Length: 243
Image 1: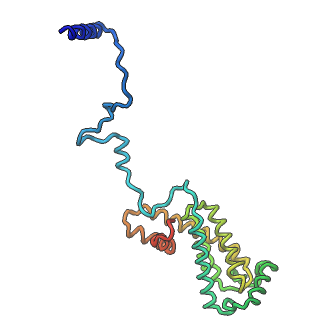
Image 2 (image 1 turned 180 degrees about the vertical axis):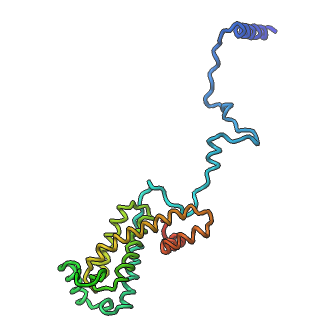
Image 3 (image 1 turned 120 degrees about the horizontal axis):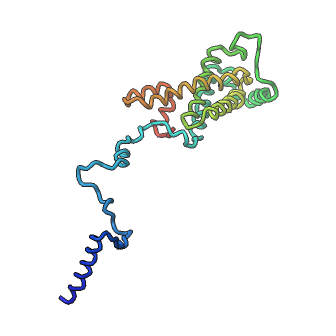
């Protein structure tokens, strides 16, 4: 009883001070102790706004376009363009053996020497879009598609529009002076028309490819994207590249 009396007296003093409007210092809070407001909500209670927003946000759709702030990926468009040039050059050798199937080193040396010592071919006496002596469907359609393929592959791999145009110009020069110059002289028309037409057609393909990401139906989304970028979809679907 002797030990209880001091405790009871102290408790009465605290209660009297509280009733009189006086404040007492609260005991220090242990920062390591769990807070009452951090306890998990009871079962069935609504989640806090932040958690509810996170739960309501759907995961990114497979194949969705990468954020604009992401760094461009160089390997896919470079490998894609080199493979496309190799296949196209092989097809040329089959369709037009003379001069593209002439693999004699002296002939290659002659044509490469002509390419670097003479200006690009431009014969103003020929009809429009035949200034390099090629049929106009090859110049207009073929080179337009070639340029758009180079441009589009760069755009889908997070290149900006200006960088994709520069990439298409570099690819066109590589085609004219590297792949094709061992058979024919570089074409002034192709050097200008291929990247410009490729940028216009390629950007249209890229915009369509991005817009297809909003299609809810997965088969329809895949169909539209494969229609505007068939080779890119094959590469992404096979897991060769991620863009």
